[in-house]
Length: 104
Image (cartoon, rainbow, N blue to C red; front, side):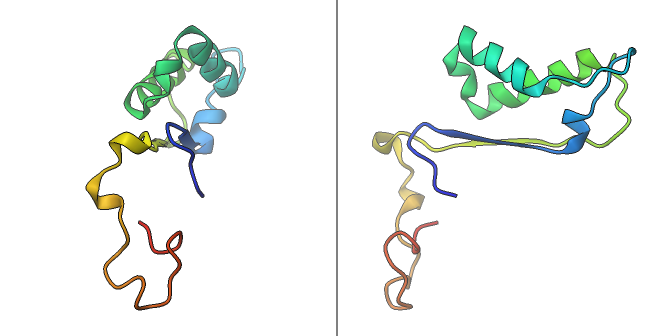
């Protein structure tokens, strides 16, 4: 899945979206992320986003989780900060991979 520069991809398991409070209400992942982004767009940094969701799920569920939870976020760096490791894979051109397919 291609990501635009500074775009963040968030993946969670159903243990996050189905975390319930004492009244049986589900954790509002979408609402929590939207509120966080409205308050501070910088919270899309993966480390901060994962922490916010983890704390939100624990707070919502009274720190009692009944299912496994996984929260994973990755963010593409701005092009000016791309890592040296984002170039073509060794031998990509020789294997006939296009420039887009040959990047890791």
